Amino acid sequence: MKVAPAQDTSLDEFWSLTEFTALNKKQRSVAEGFAQRVSAPAIPLETKVNPVKVAIIYPGSQASDYWRRSLASFEVRMDEIGLPHKIESYFSGSSSDAGGQAALITQALASNPDYLVFTLDVLRHKPIVQRLIARGNPKVILQNITTPLKVWRERQPFLYVGFDHVAGTQLLIDHYKTKLGQKQDFAILFGPRGYVSRARGNTFLQAYSDPEAMNLKASYYVGYDREKSRQATESILQEHQNLSFIYACSTDIALGVMDAIAASGNERTVMTNGWGGGAAELDAILEGKLDVTVMRMNDDNGVAMAEAIVLDQTGNSDQIPVVFSGEFALVTKDNSTEDIQELKARAFRYSK
Image (cartoon, rainbow, N blue to C red):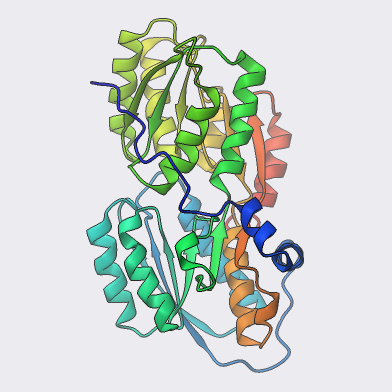
């Protein structure tokens, strides 16, 4: 296998959260107020509201439980609030399956939903989303992306919602630098070519690779595929004997890396990380198989979608930010079982 060069490394077509709030100063206070609403208990409706129809397209065929938990927390929060609703869910394969997801969008639109929840990992979907935004119906919620597209200017989606990939990656950058220093040999496994791989993978690559030390030894695009990740890791470990760690860009990748490291007997010498902190990663940390992960307070994602729709339906759309970005916690082998259980109780408060 050849080293895969980092292509499309720039995130220049997006505003970072910092840039966006600097340009839209009112957004900071709106986002802060909305975050407080998300973290607080649900407030049941006191007035009658018309039923809403929500179509949700998720790349749910992954080991990560992020998407399934997001849907569960969204449904429970809507029930607690008392907003009558109908949810139609469409689970696809990987978010890089552009054709399959475009077909699902067409299918979802046929039911004439009020809101469409989607993701934007592949920029080939941008024209579809742009047309929906221009049409105004359904209102578009873009999930797992928290960096507004510059080209859409003031015509942004109804809501960007998720956990900022760059912010989460920075926690892992700081961890590796503190634990190992900055010039250790490493490899990196990207997911599919797209937004998430750039935000998680290239952000890490640019921060940790050292041109003088030439410490990046290998990099591959493996999709969100455990078996491909295992095979890539086997090749890497055979070719590079002094590797300190392999940076994984997703849960599925981390599991495949762990499989190969365990089979090679390198558990004590080669580190790896998870990304997201779902149940599979936390179990691996408790078992001593995974070194570190950045854990999303997962259910805030679904709660934020529910609260935005409620505010919209009750005439309070001025309280909805353009972007909601949830919080992270760094979890390592050093965390006790009690620590992890407390984080799980907070992160999975609805999707237990």
